[in-house]
Image (cartoon, rainbow, N blue to C red; front, side):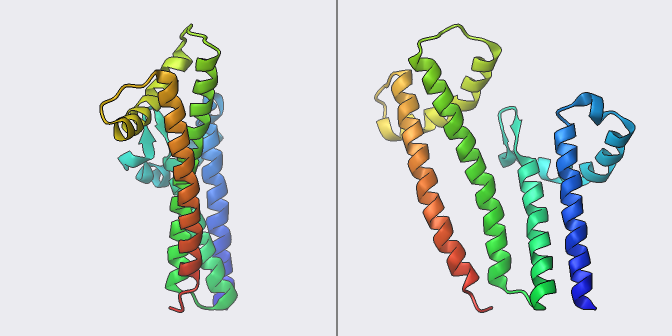
Length: 196
């Protein structure tokens, strides 16, 4: 009886996750967002999604990563309920492992986007195309804070060309991403092995 309740709750959370994903995708298409169905879905999901928008660390410039955190939290809830339904018990290690997975997926996504944008900007710089458009201006606004921090940390007052700053930042972010991945895997295995 209790198992079926947990399975049902896990299914409801999964369906709600899907509806939230639809809401997020619909926000990119105004004709769908303001339709009657879009307004209904917004009424269901926006109170939950807006709760995560209040955290400033989920925004970088004009980009809002709070939906990733919101969907990750629903994923933890679904995983926890499914584990409870399957085993009848849950350990602190499993819950902490789920939280760690959500946090890592959020930060690894940001690092991957940063790596991708740095590669795009580096290729553009190597091609020596300096006709700026709104896209390149926005991309530079997004990239300049991490480039500035990495360059100032490693160069200690010495100057680098913009291209070398891009290369240095790209290398540091790739190494950071790899190191954090190894640490995450080790910590996750440690948490899942906790008996409590």
